[in-house]
Image 1 (spheres, one colour):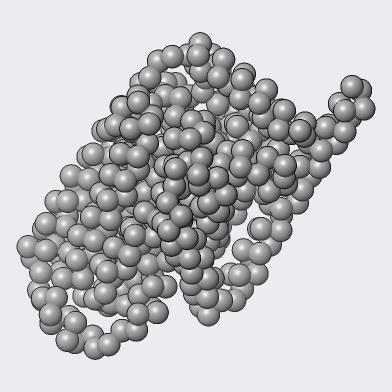
Image 2: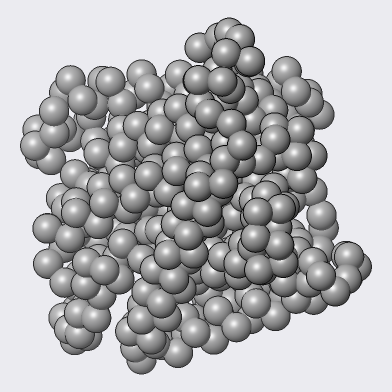
Length: 455
């Protein structure tokens, strides 16, 4: 047995000892759903509408539903593996423990998925700042400063207390759901057209375009994985992992679909495409005046805030696990007396702030969407390898592999046909992350050889 596998068992035993000492289970079903919805219903719904309507118009709600179907296929293996392994780290842990003889594969998944979370964290913070100062200033420097402040605030919240974070996440998530429901109801109630009329006016739209949009919208469903990282703080993991993930995906699908219906019925396609992430605010402003605009802005601030908090909570724990295995800098593995990975929380938020300062957030977000699809595919393949142990359906897993593979192809096709330079940028990011994975996986292998020689 390789030293890497022995190190895993050692880390797992140490982890179990830590968990045994810290027995407080402070996250129930509502908190777990809030964490997932916090990660999912962030800036995505405010930015994807414009892309969807520009490509498929009236069929945007259908693409939202199909996006939820893709997410459900991806979630199947996360649930099965999460219940089977019962350990923080989700995507990375699943690949590492399934393919324990290949530390490079584990390192690669770890580096890719963590940077994917950092990129979405950067987008959420920048989207928050854009809405926060929309009525006061358009200065890029002020946007950066506000984004930095909101990241710093949620660093403090997550380091302060898991229970405190969970309760705050509850308040933010369920408040934003109420606000988004009100916005949707108002838009639908004040519609100036009907669905049959829109379909008739639009004419035919090919299925391929609808499937491309469904794949692009996958990034709006990214976030359900964060629940796995709360395994040590949740009540009844065997029941609540499955319930919270499927409920959160169903709620997110419902929210996106209803908002899309409200938007296309009450706001002209030209306005949605032109105003992009501000389309809902613009539409609500025309229906309710400044009150409608303020309501959407407040909903956007809550959405992005809860997305920041949920992402920092879950992804920092995964980063800590990877570092504890020696596949990232060791200082990231340290936890405080409350078992909170403070160094990982601070580092993730700092790197997200650096990305905000560098610009190119749209490209980074698109990198994140491709990355999460590929990572979900790798997790499904891992589950397929041990499907008998996880009691998983072979048929469902094959369907999931086909769906995720096809979705990955579609989003890459979209990127290549819309802007080939974005693919070059994304490939450069993959190259740099792969270098990091190679360096640390070789370091682990070198440590193995050294210890074996000493023995």
